Each structure stands twice: as C-alpha cells, then as structure tokens.
Length: 75
Image (cartoon, rainbow, N blue to C red; front, side):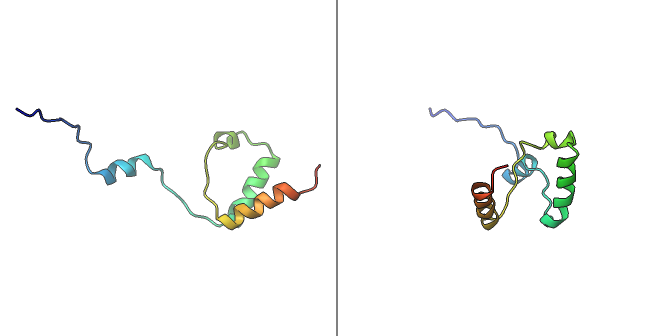
C-alpha cells in the first residue's frame, strides 16, 4: 500500500507572493533628490530606518554613479 504525502495548502501562489511584497511607487528622481539632499544635510534620524532598503535603478545610472565614485576628486 503506497503512502500518500500530505501537504499544507496555503492558497493560490499569487496571493502568497502578493503578501510577501510591499507596495511599490514609481517617482522621478527629480522629485526625491531635493528631499533626500535636505534630509542628509539635516542628518534626519529617519534616514537610518531606510539605510538597508534596496532600490532599483537603471543600468545606465548605475554606470554613471560607478564612474563618478571612481573618478571624483578626493576631499
């Protein structure tokens, strides 16, 4: 007699995935630059709450940032 394997059913996979992801908002960088710049200058504590969050940027912006990091004059 073959033994059946029991599994726990969590519902449709789409709903499980939807619960794992947070809502996303798409905004132009020009809209957040001034806010982040001011928050950095003012050393706002709430910035630390998000310092480990990951963001998605375009590959061309990433390349420009890497070049800037490598070639900028030392302070």
